[in-house]
Length: 278
Image 1 (cartoon, one colour):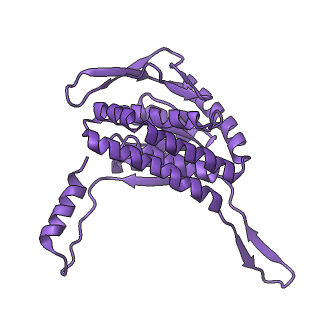
Image 2 (cartoon, rainbow, N blue to C red; image 1 turned 45 degrees about the vertical axis):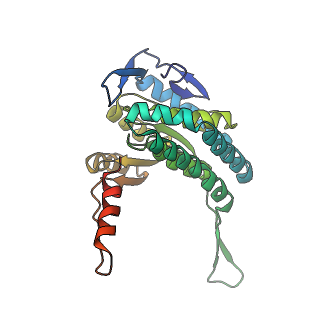
Image 3 (cartoon, rainbow, N blue to C red; image 1 turned 180 degrees about the vertical axis):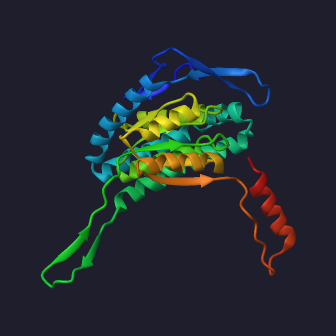
């Protein structure tokens, strides 16, 4: 199922340097549906070097040109919807209708952020002295790291990747080991859309070990995690060591607030759909 994929380095799919792999199983049958590379420190070094080169290229590109590539990737994702949906369904057990909808939502992320890329506005601030003017210019922070969960395997990486690309950043994507295929497909669409080498890299392998190595690397300047509170605490602590920016989407236990003027049956139905979906 993953024969053509692997670690994405310099826009090329490669095996791990060690040749080690790890299995991916169907949650429906528990059968092995494929294997993916199990990366180690040598692979991390290659991924980071590629990402740093990619960042140097991408940040120098005009925002309008970055936007064109992102819009093209959105078009490709929509064209390949059925293929991506079948991979997603095989990995997660997600119904095909849900998988098709998620693939379209992933495409929407790139379309939205393609337009946002052209609107990274600065600020002009009144200075204390009348003959001075203060200006704020926003610059891309650097190479980012995407750590995403299995339940929305295309949408979650796409949200992180698209936002980073719009800001002019390169990004290393570490998809969930249970469902990496959707992220592979998103990265493939970006490469086919003309993304320069190294701007998006993909690495798979032992989650906690890889995440710790990547977060500790000086090249990584921003981390985005979707995961559990327990993992979020660890990642935040690791980011603090390097004083690195972090964005967290944690847990799955958000409260439901029903106001007195709301219809209880409608509220219950909406809450059930929101809470038990995926």
